[in-house]
Image (cartoon, rainbow, N blue to C red):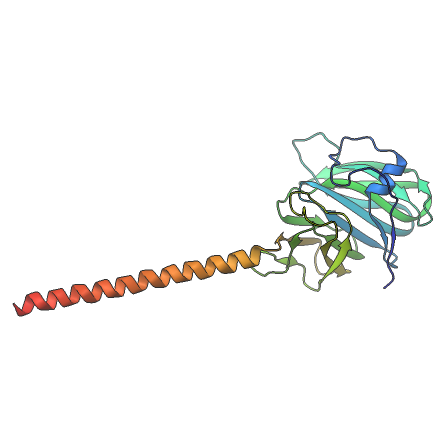
Length: 252
């Protein structure tokens, strides 16, 4: 599969965007990651180590599209921000949006003046800590790109739903978080992907963890098992000594 990545260099910090900044067109081009996967319809969620998340959708020949976002009923802040639409040729187009909320979820209607083929990008909140869950509206290729330094797939701490997914890695030249990776600017990011998951589930779920978490858990489990064996051994030795004393007292 041929992947074409359209990025424009500049000076914006991709990891610093908090949601209330006013970015110009060139900054938005740089901030979002536009990857043409050779598919008619695809959605990529780029997670970070905070609540901010970048969503990039590729659509073909549409005049409108409905997307979902997690709704915080206590907040009046926009559910999606920095909405940006661009063709594969780099032409920026206008996009109008309206929102309706129900049962903790929001449906955002994105509309174009003319038939549109290209990328739709925006930022939204991911309220789960090391947990990603998102409702999907229709079939298509879906990707979840984890923060640098994180992985998934462990059945205990990294469950992924629905089944039928693939896990791979892409090479991201930018570290997602200075708190996670400080020694390299060439970190691999893990990608979870589904091809048409809508028929199996109306939502995709990814639990993820630091790369070293399985090792830490394994070492902790071994230490717990070792101490448990020590306790059992001590108990058995103590019981034998007590039994020996009792038998000695009976003989006297």
